Structures are given as structure tokens and as C-alpha cells.
Length: 278
Ligand SMILES: NC(=O)C1=CN([C@@H]2O[C@H](COP(=O)(O)OP(=O)(O)OC[C@H]3O[C@@H](n4cnc5c(N)ncnc54)[C@H](OP(=O)(O)O)[C@@H]3O)[C@@H](O)[C@H]2O)C=CC1
Ligand SMILES: O=CCc1c[nH]c2ccccc12
Image 1 (cartoon, rainbow, N blue to C red):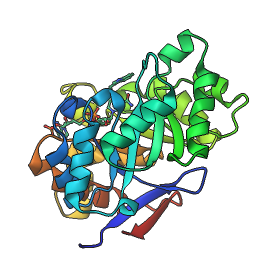
Image 2 (image 1 turned 30 degrees about the vertical axis):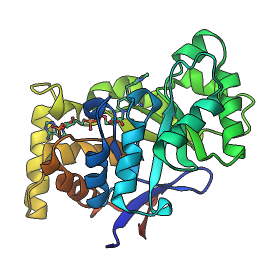
Image 3 (image 1 turned 135 degrees about the vertical axis):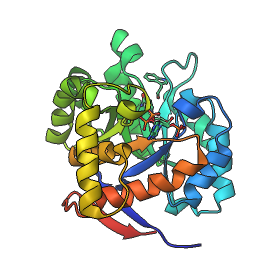
């Protein structure tokens, strides 16, 4: 198997997380993700973003198995679903591990603070997250869609600071996201982004199109090779210090994703990143 270069960010517990992740939600939600995941891994992507709510952890697991990659070469994420009546957080995680066919995940996130917030149970949920990390079922724990207020509540009395807060991040939500990104940074929490391609994938014709096009053209000229608006958006995320969780349902875009990582990082010196061979 060929070795690939992976750009990683070091989390607050010393664990290294690959900067680019392949997501199994949105386009792949509830679908058989196996072949998409296998091909993503074949194209050098080692960070796989799943969730209990995506209803496809079993096929994410099948794709991982079919890739032939050893467990230590992959970074597997899953997220706690919003509601799990009659079960404990640990039980839902054990079900995920079973479906994924692994005995630990690299990162386990609380997907959505809303239900716990409503019931005043954010601290209780976080205690249960800390417990599964201590038991070795997950290497790192974190959160998703958490506001500054949610984070403050969890940090008050936490034994383990969340390693990651995965949030929607692109220029159209920057005003709302900036305080969260800053708070994450101040507390050693790595920001992971989703929805980063929104300006090209979902809101074409918006006010930043012109700026994106200007930057794209300039980069294309200086690099002497094609640059896409999507790459410009990923570079924007990189400059904010954010992990990029993206996805595609089209095989022709896999190579672009990998190229996107190389092109985004090349020529951008950032002490946050380390490069390692896998
Ligand atoms: N924590 C959370 O609450 C959430 C997490 N996520 C995670 O993040 C992952 C990615 O989320 P998502 O919001 O889809 O990510 P992106 O914003 O990166 O969007 C990916 C989508 O953009 C399309 N796309 C990519 N490039 C282009 C282009 N140049 N022109 C037009 N369309 C393009 C792809 O379509 P195509 O298939 O045609 O290539 C794909 O469907 C999810 O799979 C999930 O794992 C997502 C949402 C919420
Ligand atoms: O991951 C993105 C979609 C999703 C599924 N469940 C939740 C809960 C809260 C926010 C987003 C999502």
C-alpha cells in the first residue's frame, strides 16, 4: 500500500488529527457509504467523519474494512445522537463500535447540545463522555454545534477539555461563528468545520462570488495550475485554523479533494500543522 502525506493538527491531548475529513452525512445520509468511503481512503483520505444520526455507520465500517487499511492509519469519528431513550451514552457508543467494526473511535462528539441544554444535562452528558474516554473506548472527546455559552457550561467542572468543536463555518456564517472560533482557540479546542463549500454548493450568486473569483484567478496565476473556488474556501478555513470536513457523492471529485489538501497547504507556512507519513 502506498504511503500518503497527511497534514495534521495536534489536539490538546497530543493526538494528531488529519486536517481534511471525508464526511458521511449530508449527501450520504442514510445511504450505503461503503464504496464512497473505500474510494476516499484509496485516494489518501484517512479522517472519516460519521455519526449515529447518519444511519450508515455499518456501511462506513464496511468501507473501512474494504479499504484494507490498518486501524492505526485511520482517524475515525462518530457523534452521539440527539436522543437515545432508555440507553446510556456508553451503550450508544458500544453500538457504534459494533457497527463500525472497531474497538475504539479516535474522536467521539456530542452532535447537538440542544436536548441536553433543554434538560439542563450538559454537564451530566459531558461526565459520561469523559468516562468513555477514560475507559479507552475513544481516544478523544469533543462537541459539535456548541455555542460559547454551551462550552462555558461544559468547561465549568470538566476534567477533560473538549478536543474539538465541530461547527458550520464558511464566509456566510462568519459573523455568528467568529466568537465561537475565538473561544475555541482561547481554550485549546480545535475548530472543525462543516458546510465549508456552501458558497459554491448551495448559495451560488451570493455576495462573495466576485471576491472568490478574484482570489481564485490570482492564485491560479501565481501557481500556474488550475485552482477552484472550492479550494479558495478550504484555504480560508485553513487560515482560520479549522479542520475541513467535506464530502462528495461524485467519484470525479475525490482527486480534487486530495489535490485540494495539497494545494491549500502548499506555500502556507503554519506552525499549527505537522506533516507525517502514513
Ligand atoms: N456536525 C454537524 O452537525 C454536521 C456535520 N456535517 C459533516 O460534514 C460533512 C460535510 O458536510 P457538507 O455540509 O455537505 O460539506 P460541504 O459544504 O463541504 O459540501 C459538500 C457538498 O458540496 C458539493 N460540492 C463540492 N464542491 C463543489 C463544487 N465545486 N460545486 C458544487 N458543489 C460542490 C458536494 O457535492 P457533490 O456530491 O456533487 O460533489 C457535496 O455534496 C458531512 O458529510 C458530515 O460528515 C455536516 C453537516 C452538519
Ligand atoms: O450532521 C449534520 C446533520 C445533523 C444530524 N443530526 C443533527 C443534530 C444537530 C445538528 C445537525 C445534525
